[in-house]
Length: 122
Length: 107
Image (cartoon, rainbow over all chains, first blue to last red):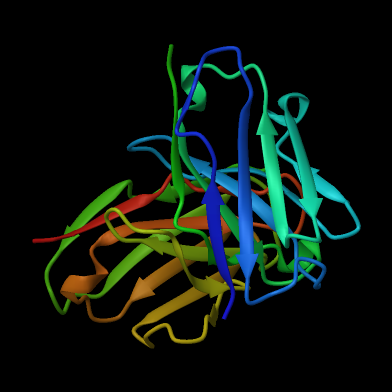
């Protein structure tokens, strides 16, 4: 049974960089899945941020692509997200998730972390 | 980018009712569509993928249909635990997009 757990600061100052890590247990991140980030502003809908494959292949939301960096740490079975130049509009619950398979044709999310609220405020 | 539009944005129905939620894509997406349920304060849960395939463990009162641009999620007999917001999601090509959600309440 795969488990995903997000970690990182709950408060980030405007213009700084938001950094989150997703720790994966019960499953290897070198397996045939994409590892994704999705966010949800308070009271609003879901927004896909991007994802990374063990080959370091990535897909990113065009609206965020210039501000995001994703990486893998296979030794720790973790993957990470950095979002730079944050503003209040980046305040959201951030989820990490696993896709059903490592192909865009099966790019839906069958396992999710519990989510972590990140607030952007001075 | 392909936009996903759900309707209605919210609805209220009685226990036992048949409920239908619609998701429309701005361009054809074959059957590359998933549905999620997000109960209040909880994590989204995959219900259906490939437009009509029920994820393991999901009750059979949930069903999905459609192909191309028009899709539906149906709950055959509404139960109190189905109170949630439902999202469609298109995949198959980047970028991935979600519908804006449909909030379902019990009358």
